[in-house]
Length: 143
Image 1 (cartoon, rainbow, N blue to C red):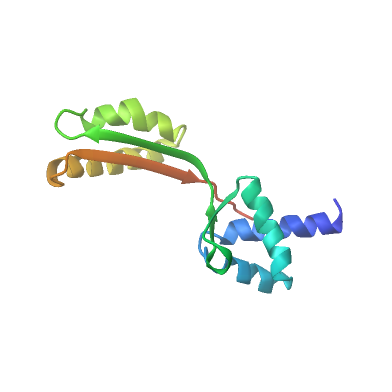
Image 2 (cartoon, rainbow, N blue to C red):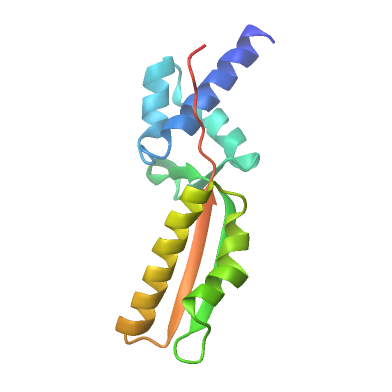
């Protein structure tokens, strides 16, 4: 791999690793960290947005970047005539989450069913909207 290409990948990894905690300042942080121009950093952001790794909101100086969702799922359940929380879990949520370690799945089950019950029993609303947005994270380990 050429030196230029390796440097570009290093910049893009830095952006992906730090964008979640610095969505509005990541451009400036990357410019300072790599000592490159705004135009150089913007070309890396443009590439990450085009390949679907990042989403951007806003225009020019007010632009904010965030990790793109790998999975977005939404379902509306009517309160009263809708299914019980364990049916929702079994029929919808469990399959959306995919394969997880048993202890993690137990935490999801408990958290989801408790929130679903609380919304049904205490919200005074007519429906429950369940939304999952799962984004990729990147972990860079030292060599």
